[in-house]
Image (cartoon, rainbow, N blue to C red; front, side):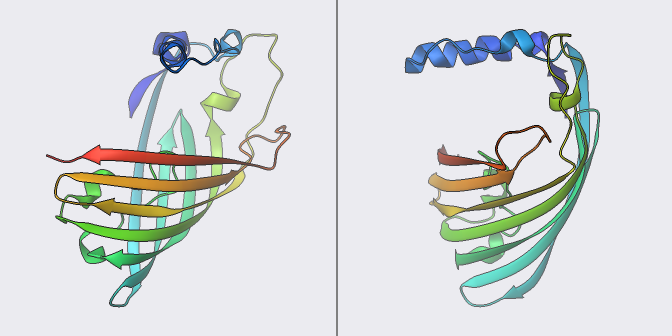
Amino acid sequence: MLGTVGPDSYAEDAQSIVHDIVGSPEPKGWDYQISNEFVYQVGLEAHQLLMRAPIGEFSVFGRGQGGNFQSEVAVGGTYRIGFDLENTFGSTSVLPGNAVDIGLLSHSDSGMFFFATIEARYRFDDITIEGDKPAENDDIHVQHGQAAISSGVSWYSQHWGAVASVTAQSKQFEESGRDHSAYANFTLFYRY
């Protein structure tokens, strides 16, 4: 990954446009965002199938990523039950909004599966938490030991598909007043 964080990312403008479209109040907090900085990240992920039955499978995975954005190592496991699993192996994750990698469904014309994925990770650093910020910001520190769990359902045909998922994560910074956060996501997609 290559990109930028801070005002040059235009994230404030993008969020304001979305808020205008859906009728939400004007977003706040942008005066406290981290300064402009070029970011880079490389990562590697590997999956190992441990067991496959006629309609279910269990696998484990390990991943690592490094750079100046979020450096971390993680291990986890996934259980899936459904149809045409052998052609969609490795397609699930615990990333909010990306619990199923649609690109990894390309070897299957149609299918459906339910999934549950759990992950433990050690995050070394996170520029979004400990990056260069305005002086009036409070100092916050990365919570190094983190965990996440995601579950949901994916259905797809040759062209259309949908994913519904829920992801919960432990806190990402030590000073957080909440021990976890949760996200629900619904994705409708078209494949050509």
